[in-house]
Length: 103
Image (cartoon, rainbow, N blue to C red):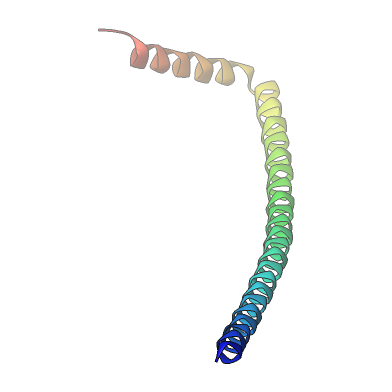
């Protein structure tokens, strides 16, 4: 009877050990998948960031070119009509001063 009692726990221990091993393998597989997903998301975020950076750079260059074009137009207008430009500047300054005066 003592032998029968000893063999039963051994079978139970082997079942417990195999369940532990299976659990460890499942945890390691899940961890491996998590690390792989982390790397995937990291690369995806970097790619998206580069796309946004390139798009922003393009918009900046377009804006800079447009600003240069408008500056050239304003300069040529001032050279062609200096008195009109002076009158416009005076009127704009007067309006701004009226807006910010504390009356």
